[in-house]
Image (cartoon, rainbow, N blue to C red; front, top):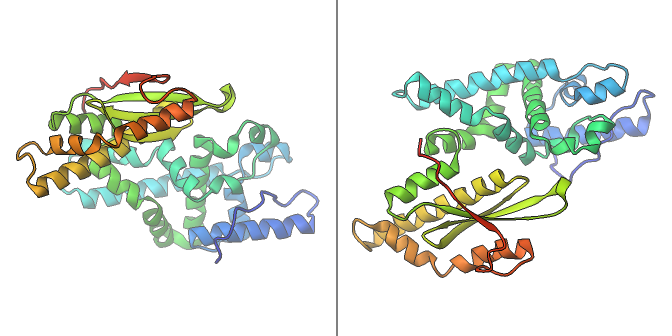
Length: 307
């Protein structure tokens, strides 16, 4: 099936308007193409029906039962995968890894990758408050879709879908150790390499109800990565991930080259200094202020203890 463009959000109305029905069918075909499965129409409609839409349209069936089912299917597949992937990990560590994958923020990220918000049937009130990009609504709807795939095509198909959507996240959580906490992982890495404590220079743009935050992660005065998000926390996590990957890659390259035996991090830091100002400049530019020593953004030192 085609993955062409973002569909319109029309859904069949109470009057059964034929144009709306055609538009809904086209919209569902796009989503089914992204999922890789063609589902029974009524089941997919129910999976996409948020309670706000149901209440505004005479008490239609909502996706909450499917969400309940999909949550269990997702948990089973992820738990089974982690159990087999880590035969020596105790139950407590496995639970932390599972929580890093099966949580609202992580599910919402996967849902955004599918542009799932464009297909959800929302009430007007929820629509007006930005419901299509709310993490809780995206996560719940994704679980409902997984539940629908399970009902329509049984566990094997649902398991294959979960693996296709979540295996990168499972792998990443295993690399991090637990929690998908890139700030903690960056602090652990910089401590091990003797680079000091990470700092985050954060700026914000946009009106109060729709702010965008931009963060630069700096270590030892060197900027290694940037991130953006709807909250300061999200922006800092993305910046920390970029910095973690940059420092890890440069440290490995320095070690391979034999530079600074026993101190690969120094080579990484030296090689990054030329790129630092441009990273901080992105934050200053987003803030509309001076770059980068004007410090319109507020640097925050990460003092989170490593887990």
